[in-house]
Amino acid sequence: MRMKLYSWDISPYSARVRMQIYAKGLTDIAIEPPPTYGTAKFHEDHPIGRIPLLEIDGEAMPESDVIAAYLEEVYPEPSLLGATPRENAQVRTLARVGDIYLINNTFTLAVQTRVLAAPTPVIAGNEAIIALLGGQLVSNTKALDRMIGRDGFACLGRLTLADCALVPALFFLENVLPGTGLADPIAANANVAAYWAGIQKQEPAARILVELRRGLEERRELIRSGAIEKMRAASRAAREAAEQT
Image 1 (tube, rainbow, N blue to C red):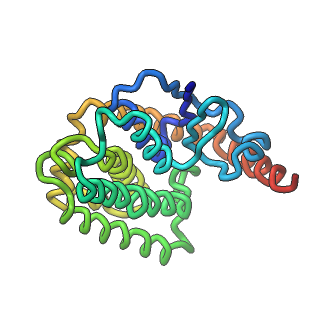
Image 2 (tube, helix red, strand yellow):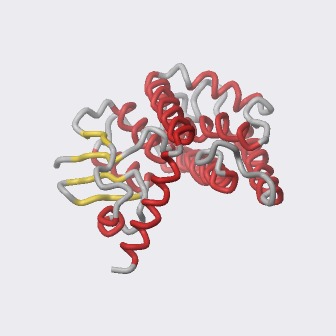
């Protein structure tokens, strides 16, 4: 099989798959930006219209959670799951907290405030939504604080798929919330804060954080230059054109 992961540095969903690839030491999966992203062809070829995409012999598989499960089946060693069904459930629960409860809410907050798309976040008129999303993130981080491992890993005392989801989730919490006027909840939860400090010492996590910071700075430069608005407009037009065919 020939595999290629289509990915952007800044994408937290792509980052969780990249961290899995790094943690497993896989060297036969090419990682690159999607060549047709933002065009009508991309939306025609990929109805969901998002990344990551894992291309396998010319066919593309969407959704980070699906890709992660597929890679574990194809490359079972070293395993990023547990040794028993119960351990697997623990890994998947923590990964879901990162993916659904943290990343999704943080991304929705970023969209509502345009913190990753405009020079000045949009707060006026969105106060109720921002307060709701911010409250959910505070509550979800508190829940994670009760569930997270105490030894520098999310669970099982080693790197798992839970860490792959939580590292980009906590990165976005730390970097998006302050721009919206909300406090970062990591520091308010001692176990999460200790985990966050510890996991960053692991090489796959450190590598992902370098990429995420690079992607965030590139996004900020696009915002400063005004290029982001042109890209968003072109992407909307491409999506609408694809939907009409």
